[in-house]
Length: 304
Length: 301
Image (cartoon, rainbow over all chains, first blue to last red):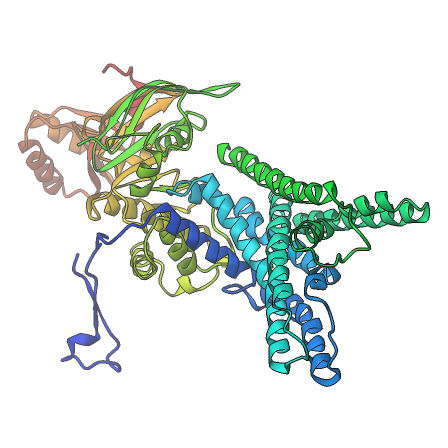
């Protein structure tokens, strides 16, 4: 099988063998074959790029980057305020909670992308016919969505902090607040990614996934807000403090910013004492529940 | 060397028994796995990949037990599923590179292998376009490419000719033959059509209802049956009588004559007879029994 295709005469004279493509037949691969961990990491990076629309069409890049831009606006405005008025804008720890609609839309629009196409176009069997396991697959998808959300939340905070250092505000820099807010961003990213990917994984249709995640966000924050309002109107502030914890954004704020780092709450108040432990438990419980649901979902999908 | 072997392998689902004490052994080369829809072909492949736990019995792939060493098996085996499995918004190159990395190839090696293997399956400029616009034939080629991209020792191809037109079918079969013969990769290929496997397989396994019907080398199936079929434009009777004069046994079969081959001289007699009578020869072919005929006979023939 040594057939050779001569190149077009214009590109190479007959005397130049460099212009000839030789079919050298099938070549075996004897290079390294890396571990499952490397494959999982490659899948994570592939999914993370996909979340931001990299390697996809221009249309797929619009939503994630537009949301990213909106998320940056308060940081830019705050830096401008610090530079011109010597006045702080948004507090680090409250940034995510105040802007919560943006990460929620980001989660709803992008988390179905990480899981739905593999189910809909039945790519999953190809992954599972390779060394990666269901656990590896699920952790790669969760890691990708978590990393995407963390970037969305942490980049504006970091820009704001760099801005603060450059502007050189009077008084000490709020380094500990910044670091605490990064921890909060990580907490938000993990919880939201787990919830979003788990909900999205139950339907192979992306549109339905988007609707389901946004419905979950609206329902949880709506119920939380309504209960808070109701309890405050009857003067039951303790119950109102508990009602905040129904929203996934406030529960992370209560667990990490307020509970672990002792910063000011973004809501009016959270339940004290036992309430801190409860907030941390709710957060961890929701993450565990979502991951379990994901694993069970994929066990079932794989056996088909 | 045994590529795969099963021993009393069974798998039952809540409502059906997909495999029923199946014992087969497959060597290198191209092996056809034939059975009607629902005969247990896909179940067998899933068990061999270690994705489905057998209910009973044992199975080994390349000497590795499917129950305990599934991950190792999947590292050195390729799988082409029967169904569509291509995301429409990626190009064939991106997809194949990604699948190579999922098999553990480093980035550069994955790119080189993907380019190589896409060329071998016959995808050229179109490999940079997104796969959403591909024809069925092109999709089947990408599915085959992703099964070969990590240079496996064996590939399991589930109904690779499904949905292809006759020309695409021929090209796919030729490609599978090349994989087995030239690339040195053992192939297990399923089909519900015996006729197409006849052309490319070294060995054929036939299962039905999860049970083994027959497992034999292809030569046993389609050995020459010592007859030659002759078709002439006109003068069939004259030819028949001329051959009978020369001591050949001839039977008429519609527009053709079946001539028994006693010895190589029969071919000479046939040639001379046609030439002497100045007949217009349309067809002259060795009578082969087709695989289908074999399966109409009892399995112990």
